[in-house]
Length: 170
Image (cartoon, rainbow, N blue to C red):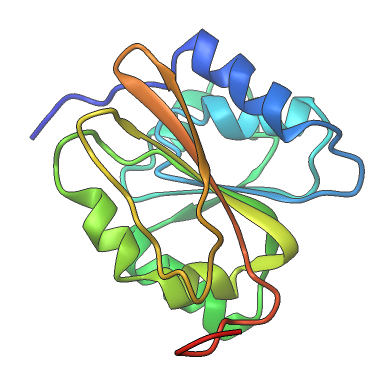
């Protein structure tokens, strides 16, 4: 198993610059790891903010500092995202930073319906991934996105479609 790779400062700054104003917007950090991105979202004014990770590293990191400034959901993304969808929870921004080069983009593609279901109308899915990986979510659920490259890392943005496209045309 590969060692965790936290989001770099350059990518973190770019992410929040691209997302723009945060007033009244919520944020979900999938694969939260140490909680760095979720903390930054909370510090910038996103509310509520939640993080999902199966390891609990973010929680351990906050034990000495007090409570994390976000809700921590411990579990595997493959189980948590469908559960959030079934419960009706939605977020304006869903950020996913899975481990690089371990086959996560196709797994996330297969979860497109659940991912779309946890994103608010007008919301966005942001994927941080290796430039050697591709991610193509269901075009009936997400618009084709803009990708920005920062060395080995890419940020790809996909808007949730409010009205799913029908097969064979508009």
